[in-house]
Image (cartoon, helix red, strand yellow):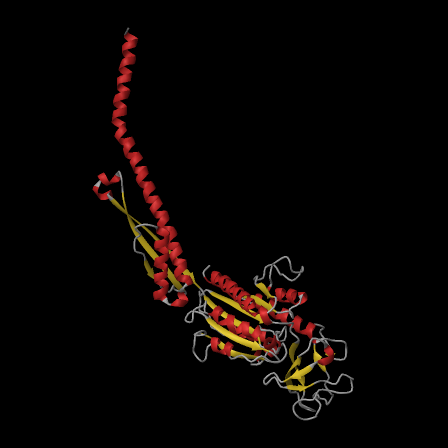
Length: 456
């Protein structure tokens, strides 16, 4: 009987203990629910300010007022019903990089904690900051004669203004180089590159005249040509990008976009052409055709066709309007050009074609651009039309260092910045509308990739 009474006594104590801890259990359960509410709100805020920040950064080219409003709209769309009003600002960091900062605070009304007056409403905040680097970009655009006949000129003049409008007139700097028998800097790298102004890239592209061959190469390993204002277009593009002073700590992305409708068939070098006792080197462009039997020589400044060399071996190079043959300082007739590909002096009657020489120099220039320290260059290439054969596509992919495995082994170099090659099949005749769309898509894809790099 005594043992039974003891059991009954224990049961009574359990009920009392449970009654004492029940409020505590309810309090902790309520606290867990309220913390869950706070967590959900924090997650919504974080997602919303992140989306708003990226939207503001993406639309900086429209001006801070418009970019700020679009950021707010994006925040509200992501947050859902009864969103708080975010604050959008556009500060500069210590290295003068442009930032977009979005901050928002929401008040969460608690369910259980509200019985403690100070916890009736709890503020939850989230902040997102996106830093945008500075873009230094040069366009190298084909203005050869074939562009006037195959629709490429029309498509290019349509797509380029839409492309450059993706970037900021006040943050970024862009240059335009064009090439045919010679190359020119049509817009030196600077701000205010797009728009309706008379001196913008937009107007320069619209005024392009298409004629001549395809001098699309670089200087290769020849540094003497880099100082010339009418040097090879890829090297001129590099020179434009490198001419901008970069501040310490500034985030900079360098880009070259190269467009052509055919295989480059012209290169540039200097030869002796001053006569006995004169060591002067004359800058000349060689080519105009894809085979060595019809090589013209052009003045790199005016693109004037100066002469067509005599291939019998007895003749030399006539320079200017006269008939005097080019001779070196010793009086020897000059009938060879210095080759980088073969590493020797080569004449045009030695079964040598211009195209391999031009390609070699372009590839060497592209490698130098991609390995330049401390800021390498990303290269994007676009080939358009039937003149861009399969071998030309492979070559342009090599210039861009496109990692796509569909291109031959050896065209991609791991460890160097990867670009991309885009091919537009045809712009002729009835294909022009679809070609304009495809070219614009290619340019817009490049813009998206560049903008992503600017905000990483």
